[in-house]
Figure (cartoon, rainbow, N blue to C red):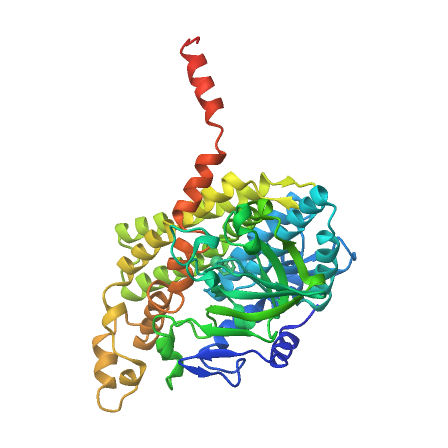
Amino acid sequence: MKTGKEYEESLRKLNLVVYLFGKRVENVVDDPIIRPSMNAVKLTYDLAAMPEYEDLLTATSHITGKKINRFTHIHQSKEDLVKKTKMERLLGAQTGCCFQRCVGMDALNALSITTFNIDKKYGTEYNKRFLKYLEYVQQEDLVCDGAMTDPKGDRSLSPSQQPDKDAFLHVVSEKEDGIIVRGAKAHQTGAVNSHEIIVMPTISMREEDKEYAISFAVPSDTKGITYIYGRQSCDTRKLEKGTLDRGNQYYGGHEALVVFDDVFVPWERVFMYKEYEFAGELVENFASYHRQSYACKVGVGDVLIGAAQVAAEYNGAAKASHVKEKIIEMNHLNETLFCGSLACALEGTKQPSGTFLVNTLLANVCKQNVTRFPYEIARLAQDIAGGLMVTMPSEEDLNSPEVGHWVKKYFKAVANVSTENRLRILRLIENITLGTAAVGYLTESMHGAGSPQAQRIMIARQVNMEEKKKIAKKLCGIEE
Ligand code: SF4
Ligand code: FE
């Protein structure tokens, strides 16, 4: 397994084409806007090397028997799925943001199932190719970006009906040694911190859409791939001299638009090619795994609840009964999210490939709660923090020889807490609920791994309504 330092060094060797604020980024790893997101991924390596986290962060490869990072593991049991949930909560709590590495893990697991199922129907060799690729990912301990979301153009039209054919990523031509693909994937979490991009279709497909029903993996610096970095609220605070106003001093997440401009993919890295009837299965399984993954939000919730409690103590309000009530409510909501992620893991089942898949109904219920509860937890945190969180002066004013003494005097609350520390904890709450980390904690909770309606459709489809009706009728004596 790689150490965090080796991971960082491996990224330096990549030749990524990244654009940020209209310019090509020369040094991606050290760019001040990007760097905190790399730090967060790096922690997935550093924690794996620490004895106290070894059980959650590492696993035994089912193909080589070697010790690997859990982010490259194919779940072999319910216990593996439970450890995944706990690992994600742990990392969310250690970083206070999105640590980005789960999408690749979820893509690998979904592909381990679907490549097997396609082969069973068509006698193809996708699973063999996939396992060879997986061994490479495990051996090199790589970060994979699981790329699913296409730009999608006009939502009322299917891929093949779009006026711009590239609205969904598709095959342009076929060669003897591989395929050429074109299109883009949007909102790609951790894309520029990844060694590999694993592409999957974004929706179920029909026969007329089959050139869009493709899945493959390419190195992230493959010729023809360009990354356009997504900006975040308050991101340029990372360019300022001081660091207090960033809130989170160390970590962050990121998303990017990834453009594939006629990219070549060799056949040995193609895992689905026009088997359109398997696109829906791959999407649903990936989405279910990723909906479980939102245990990460529970970890970020841990940070936010801790910050709200500290803010209450610093304000001198921690003993007020309504504040205590609000903290209880925040914990109740946060642990309910944890319950959902654990439940879908514990109800997981073995698939024909041997991979354990989460219970997809419960994974969707889990994610549906994630689209709501973090917003309520954030509301309560802001309630407890007070308005100063959004009206307080900058770090430079705090340290100004002219006005600094007033900032310190008038924003002083309890006697034994410095004004600086009070401002620090409020900036952290601001960061998670309004700043760069709110991308991951709030809007991504809403839309990541599918918008709320996507889960509601799955819930409607997966509950056994006939059975419920039958029991109700039986209990009241209806005989039809
Ligand atoms: Fe992982 Fe959560 Fe980030 Fe998704 S949002 S990649 S589950 S940390
Ligand atoms: Fe996500």
